[in-house]
Length: 217
Image (cartoon, rainbow, N blue to C red; front, side):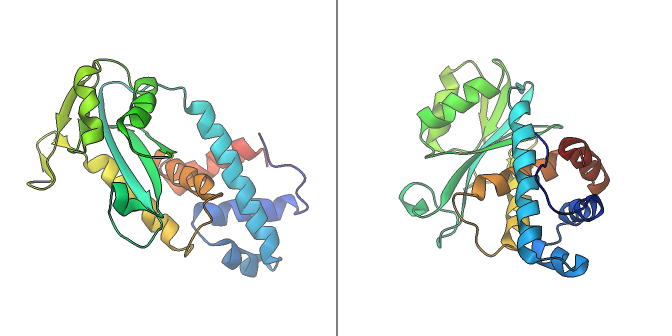
C-alpha cells in the first residue's frame, strides 16, 4: 500500500512526513507549509492508513520467550476502570515481547475468551507470560504457558515479575494521543497503530526512513 491520488507535490509530502514523525499536529504543519489544514489532515490520515496496513502484515509474527500482557482503556470520563467502570471507553489489549516489539488491538471487551483468542495466535506455547491479577488472565494457567502474576495492590514489580514494559507503552501512547483532545471512535484504531509504530520503530530517523519506504514517496 502506498499514498496515491495526492494533489500535494512530493516536496510537501516529504515535509509532512517529517512533521508527522516529529509529532507536529496537522494544523501546525499546514501553517508552517502554508497549505490548507484539511489537506494536511487528509495526508496524515493516509500516513496512518499506510502504517496500519503494514503493521497488519507483520501481525502474523509470533512472540516467544518472555512476554507481558495488559489491557487499557482510552477515552471516556472515568479513569483507570475495568468492567462496568469502563463504560464509554475503548478497550485495548497489548502484548509486549521483552526486548522486542509491542502488538496492540482494539477489543470489544476484556473477557477471557476474547483475550485468549488473541493470545493463542500471537504467543508461542511454553513462553513465559507476565500479567497482573485481572481475572481474565486465569485461563493462562491451563493454556500451555508459564504464567506469572504481579499483584499491583501490593507492589509494582519483584525482579523479573512485572509488566513495566507494556505499561510504559500505554503511558507513551496516551501522551501521544492526548494532544488531539478527543479522537473519533471510528478512526481511533488508526491512531492506536500510529502509537504502536512509534514504539516499535525507535528513533525519528528510523521512523522516517521506514515511512519513506512504505509510502513510496
